[in-house]
Length: 301
Image (cartoon, rainbow, N blue to C red; front, side, top):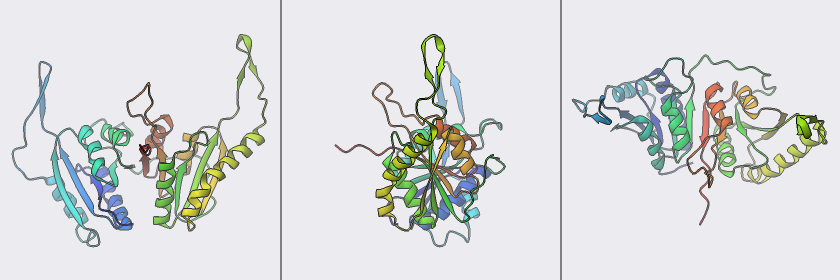
């Protein structure tokens, strides 16, 4: 899978960013792409009244990029690698890198922020605003609950909303599974129990039984997956139709997964700002595997 666009790894000297760098190197090799290692240097800043003033660094040296070179020494021989230093505010500069990348990879937390945070502000901004898919690599030590997958071997997980399937998300997930020789676990969750409200706040029993809802969800999922299966005949896509919270099932499925793929909300007329959605946000916070957030496809015309 060759392309002129690189895989970009954002580094800041933290252990989290070095784990992301390792993941980006492996992915660039699989995609036959260049690896661009980027460090956004944030100026020391101070406030004067309401104005934020920043000055340039004293020298052109960048110990963070030197650390990245040393970290990859002897391992990046099969991947064309370049190192780029930038200056600015990381939460604003990192999303902009997506305009010139096929993939942007960063750690779940950087050197700044509070130690209690599960996801840093830079990762949140990049996942919400970048034009390309963003992969956030979590730090080890997270725990998830739920049953482990029965089948062994490499596995990519993708969330499917049967009411509004996203082509960009499914296309990315199938392509990534093909690159990794992995099976694709497609999580299609349906709400249950369904509650119907009557007068005076009374809850009526559901008029449709759960078996019917599960069956309809499975039929819809198989229908949506059919064209992707034709384009990727070597990928074994397995619908996982379950009741309840989609985020919880995706987080549980992240155990031992190579990657979890989720979509980002389309812009809406009354809410033009980019949004991630509650499911995507929860998966980023709690999944134990790397998470890819895929922006919606740009409508033609």
